[in-house]
Length: 299
Image (cartoon, rainbow, N blue to C red; front, side, top):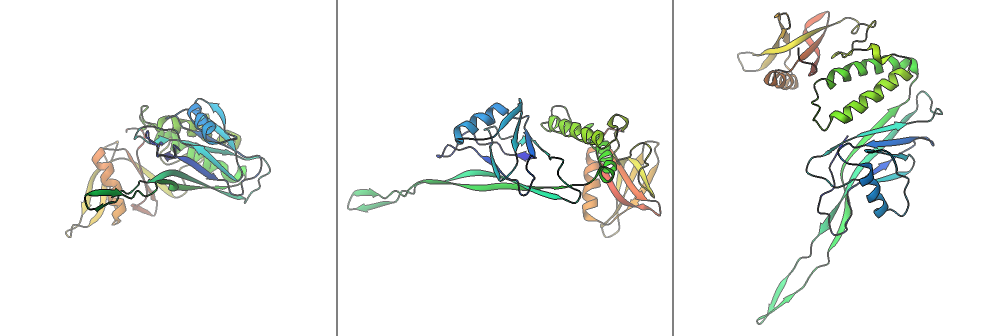
């Protein structure tokens, strides 16, 4: 997730922004951790001590805090610069959950707004008279997202987690180490590896793959993959987008047909930055792109 830091100059109420987490029906015994490498757990705890008489926010490491779920939790957002905090929200459930359960968690960032006094000048003769209005602050929601967590069995989840792990490893190769997302993404990848292992898989045997290919399981039935870089965009005599050309590593050029405006935007962006692209097609429709994956390791 990405959240805005609290402003360096606070409103008159002196309150920083807060995350208001509504845990819904998450089962008793569940715990959530918040990882923000752009700030510190100490800063979060310092603000919590100032704002709340009691709280259940606990430090896990230098950049992570943990809370039990249930009801509503408020988490202070430390002050910072104009660069947003990249973060990771992780939940762990007790073994009492069952297949088919689904839990919804809503996270809102709330901030302060301020009404400044309005000074009205009225003149009686030559003597100015001021009529100040009262000043006050209030809290409002500036952003929100919802996390939906379905519960399944090992058998139903393992393959999808393995494919996700392969794709995320592929994506990680294109994230600069100086990016504010690098540490967050690395931790997320470690958690996915832990889930794969917990589901009975071996993450050490799954290499990076832009298509989610897992050794011994094939790409996907009846599909084929082509990797390369966009060599050109195709337009008809009306100027309408009709497809694109992909140049593969062995200098083979393949044409793919599409009239979708969003597809044009995706391949144009990849063409402009010379990004690696993987095009997935169905065997019976080799010129119709089913999926286009942009990014990953350079070819």
